[in-house]
Image (cartoon, rainbow, N blue to C red):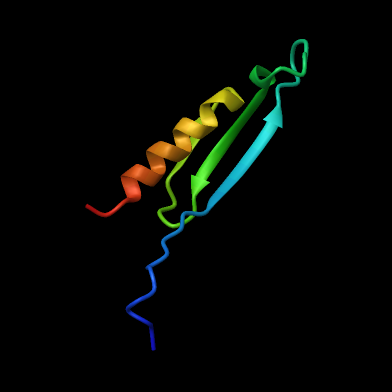
Length: 68
């Protein structure tokens, strides 16, 4: 039986797949990485061209899945 005085925990799980661009010069920069992120609860996934995009993708998917 759940305790109604405890806060309800909600979570979001993601699968992150990343790979290096192999055609062309690899500099070690975040722009060399490509990938895909999948929100496991919804099955929604998006591709990205730089690692810098990942936080915004996560934020967008969490906000889209939030009740309300």
